[in-house]
Image (tube, rainbow, N blue to C red):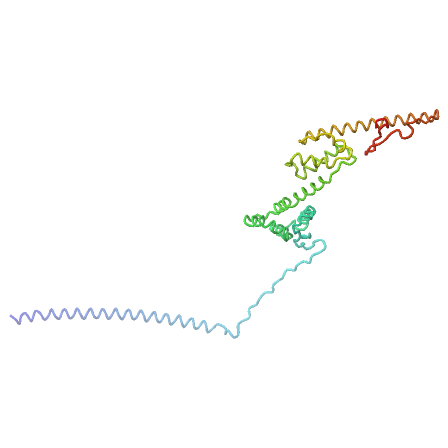
Length: 307
């Protein structure tokens, strides 16, 4: 019975061994196929490297490079300027610098600046115009416009018209007021009528900015410019405190003086004419022929008996 068991186990073991051998053969075969594929890839790579080396060997040596043919370039000819096509002028202002001296008349300088901007810099950008004008401001003027310039830089506007307007506001308008005030202080009636003098005074006072002044200050300035005759005629009269009443008083006094002057002139002319006629006809020399009339400071003649 043991012999029969051994006999049945022997074919089973042999079958297992056969299967193991077959698996090993399949594994070896797969390895051979994989190695064959690797060798083919290596062969293909070697062929590619050989082809590349062959291509490199056929290229010319770097020591003797082939000289490529460069076509000649046609440089365009730049036309020279003619008298009909002058070169563009440099963007600059041919005006003196302004240092902010209030004794200098800025009106002339601003007019020069505006003329130069139109003539020399008409084709320039606003930034160039603005920089050109700012470049003419030095010392006090540059410091005075520093805040305005900083504002323009932050806004990025570079408005040259605004810059000129600011210069006009800061310098030109105050200079006009100062000039008008000096003229107002020295304004005199002279031989003019009070009406003409007052009209001149009022126009100058507006330019000098005296709108907010007290009436007493205006009255003193008007009185300071009156003619000596009118001033003496007003001395005995009490002066009103308000300007309107004072002007009415001076107007009335001046009109009465003018009417009296015209009357005296007419009377004197009539008397002289009559005396001349008597002398021609009768040879009469009356007491009025000499020292009959006297004159005041203004030259107005009065009959001697009115003294």
